[in-house]
Image 1 (cartoon, rainbow, N blue to C red):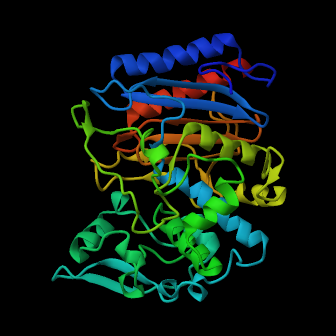
Image 2 (cartoon, rainbow, N blue to C red; image 1 turned 135 degrees about the horizontal axis):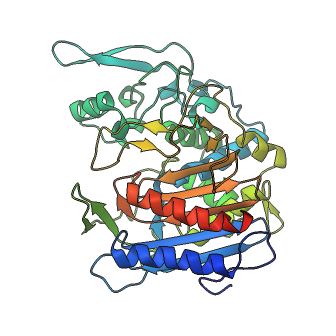
Image 3 (cartoon, helix red, strand yellow; image 1 turned 60 degrees about the horizontal axis):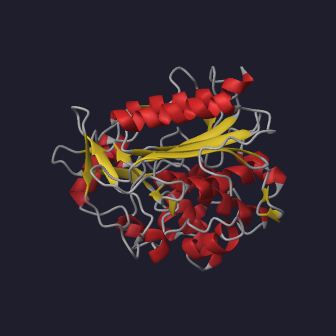
Amino acid sequence: MIPPNHWMHGYGIGDMSSTTAIDTLLTSATDRGDVPGVIAMVTDSRGTLYEGAFGVRELGGKRPMRIDTVCWIHSMTKAITGACIMQLVEQGRVGLDDDCGRWVPALANPKVLEGFDAAGQPRLRAARGTITLRRLLTHTAGFVYDNWNADMLRYHRMTGLTRVQTFAKPEDCQPLSFDPGERWHYGINIEWAGKVLEAVTGGTLDSYMQKNLLRPLAMNSTGYLLRPEISERLSGVHQRFPDGHLESVAWAPPQKPEDFLGGGGLYSTAGDYIRFIRMILNRGTLDGVKVLKPETVAEMSRNHIGELPAGVLKTANPMMSFDVDLFPGMHCGWGLSFMITPHDVPGRRRGGSLCWAGLRNSYFWIDPVSGIGGTIITQLLPFADPTVLALHAGFEREVYSGQR
């Protein structure tokens, strides 16, 4: 175990000045109150290059943020679910272009929401095209999140169904916002991919994930269930208000989730997630344990949506998310559960890097060209917080400063 805030040498990137600069950047952010607490880590294929934790777990509290602090990683769950799904694809148990209605009846005859009639009732029609696993993993199946779609937000308020309830019965399945394959829009697609996994395996996503990915990778603090040793390390969560100030938010995390959703819901630590990143950098193997084939990781890492643009979202719920455009001016692609930046980001990652994020402003990237990846984790809303994005960019620039 390397000590906190220690930069390991011999990995082709960074030096002690980088360590000091990163420490100063992150410490300054918490001292100014930009974020209550932050955790950051960097790895290459062989080991951890940097780790640091700064600030506190909750505003007004005295518990420090630590490397082993447990955080709700929300949609950083998606890449882990994607890896589990791709294990089944490797085994020939399900195909990327199979009609998922074969496995999950709710996906057999999807409907498209075209708007609302004069009486305010939803106008639905039969979808043209099929929902395939490839479309679910690339967010081109037609499902959306209501945080970034006003019509779907209105639909959910009208039906009164929670997101979990929409997975329970075919008649409650959320309608699509467009025909499968027509365009990209971020949504509950990988949640449904998780339901396909459960149908194929006959077990829960949680049990499959623990047995086939998390335990083999020694990601021992990651899961859907808050075991006592996890709960005692859990971070608080926060809300940023329109005037910029932050408040700690009281919440009671579910001890027994209603469902295990492939698109979100995992708890994890930066150290655990960095092991997942390192596995991808090693093309499916970590510490001698193989969980994916190299050719599978390569397939996951290529753009599967052609010329469709990905990654830009307009908020429909400002308390949950700002507008999202993580790389303005760049036409991003999407792989099998990752966003792909096709070009170099000046001073930062190289073209072909994989990335995504979690709702409470946690972010990761994997740069196969430079051979490094990293994560930076906070626990605050709304998503795509400009202050956190600036901190993320500054952190990443310092990581790459040794290569300039």
